[in-house]
Length: 120
Image (tube, rainbow, N blue to C red; front, side, top):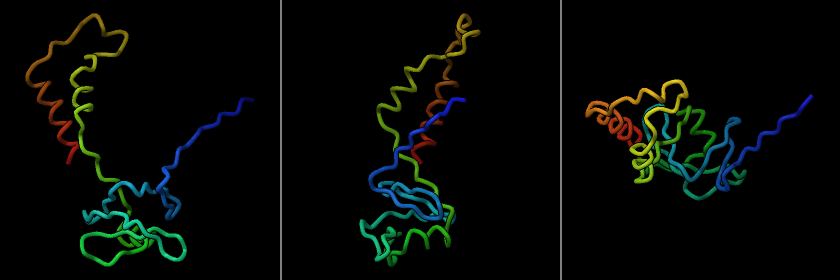
């Protein structure tokens, strides 16, 4: 019997609420569309204090149970992301490499649409 070990990297600035690990360097979006960011502070129990707009900071666990579930806000699309999409091979499946599809303006527009969707 072989044992497999999976390493999980937890960011240095992370907090655990409701059994989930939240990267505090990211912005989090609640079910109502509000964006929550870490204030850089914790309460007396060590729970991260989150803030949206000009509201009073709230504990991460309270934000999760009241407004959650929380999802990480998409990261902005970088120049490296755009370059990777444009230089990616057209097909990586072994059986289809002989028949190279021709790029059309429609396929290029589809790629750009997917990139713009990530940056929202």
